[in-house]
Image 1 (spheres, rainbow, N blue to C red):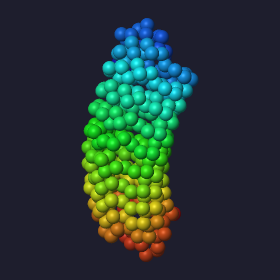
Image 2 (cartoon, rainbow, N blue to C red):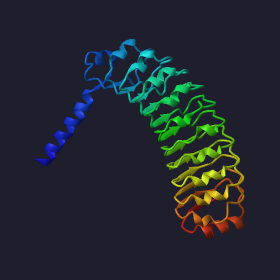
Image 3 (spheres, one colour):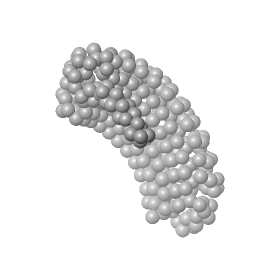
Image 4 (cartoon, rainbow, N blue to C red):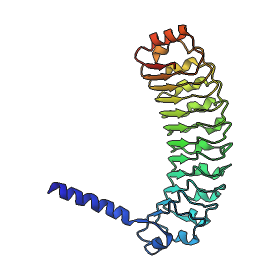
Length: 295
């Protein structure tokens, strides 16, 4: 009996949630008071009707995998919208009106054709998750550090060549993904991510790291493979919580002294670096409890 009641309860909860999800604008317009989620994924849509603005109770809109080249201004008039997914379309311009979505917490615009982003994207006060990967971005708007609640940013697979000093601080950030870009240097202000846990700079053009990297005391995963790094700053050994360090396919012949300070390090991947036998022996001795992979 308990299992039956539990099952009915779950079905009731999910049933009410599904009742609020609508698969077409016309259907949602017939139920304006209930329509909180508009899911138009994979419909091959080329346009959206302007009367979408009448759905003022919408909290979530998914336009994933369509053929949109422009978004109607009416989309940015939805006062309760907190989730907007426009990934995998043919969009090249994001309207400055994005700033009107003051309740937006999650924005997914990956796999489009954006070469620039409007400055207004940095004034979304509630934004916690931003995915801008797989676009044609060469730079990011100034004053990114206004996104005080941002926890996750994925900017991988773009053409970004620089992170300005003003990009930081981002005090709430926990995951920072910038793989497959064109970064040659990192700003000293990178220390302005006190809560960051995961960083990915794979496949850039980095030759060194700023010493301030050692100030990221909550960092657990650092991926630096496929760069041009010749030396690591000694301050990196101060990353006491770091568990995973991937620096394969760089130009390292030695690592900093006192690697044994990195008490939490579980995996160190060094393959594709010109590290000699003597240095390998030292690292094995200093990091006895770490899985070190040279090949």
